Image 1 (cartoon, rainbow, N blue to C red):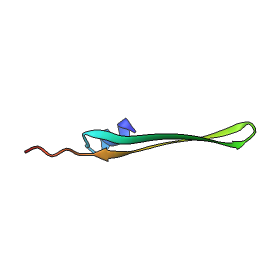
Image 2: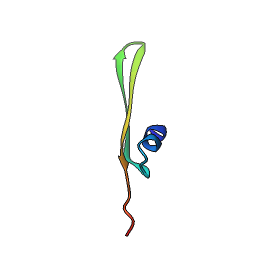
Image 3: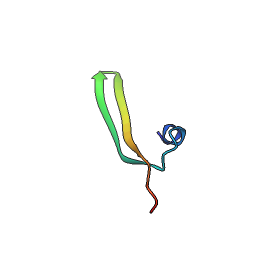
Image 4: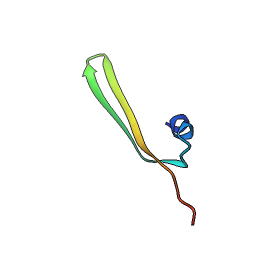
Length: 42
């Protein structure tokens, strides 16, 4: 996510989430997401 945020020329990744769920007995799904933000200067 950090590399993607850098590629968009944003300042930070905020509100990061990480979730897991069991799909099968031997398989787990991983999901990570967040919001890229760009700060304004006054």
